[in-house]
Length: 66
Image 1 (tube, rainbow, N blue to C red):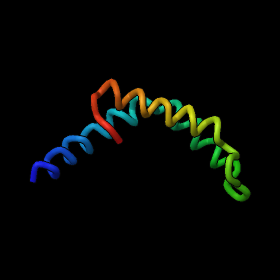
Image 2 (image 1 turned 45 degrees about the vertical axis):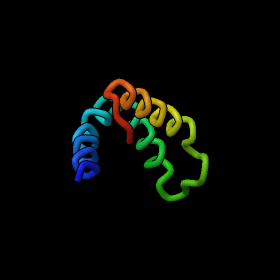
Image 3 (image 1 turned 135 degrees about the vertical axis):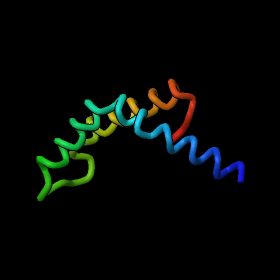
């Protein structure tokens, strides 16, 4: 049951992680939505990489993982 407890603690931090990266997440979502009908692989790779990097930094700050 220790694994379940750790998972719940980790999931409880998700809103904080995503809140720290709201700007990057919005830019990524906007990029995808602008290409909604014709989105292709690597269309928004720059925005995704920035969002992902932000998430990784936020996780390190909160001493958790995604």
